[in-house]
Image (cartoon, rainbow, N blue to C red; front, side, top):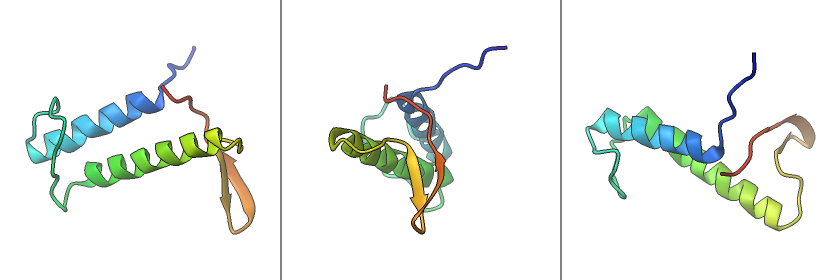
Length: 82
C-alpha cells in the first residue's frame, strides 16, 4: 500500500488548525495569539522555525534534512517544501 506524502505546508496547516481549535479561534484567521497552555502552538512555532531553517540551508547550498547533534549525524528528514 502506498503512503500518502505530506508536504511541510500540509503539516503547518494542520498544526495551525489544531492550535486555533484548542483556543477557540477561527482557523481561517491570519493572526492569532495562543494561550501559554496550548501544546499545538508550541509545535506549530517549532515546525515553522524548522521550515525556515531548512529553506535557509537549501538556499545556502547545505544538505537539507540532515540532523546533527553533538557532532554526529542522528537522522534525516524526508520532506519537500510545499
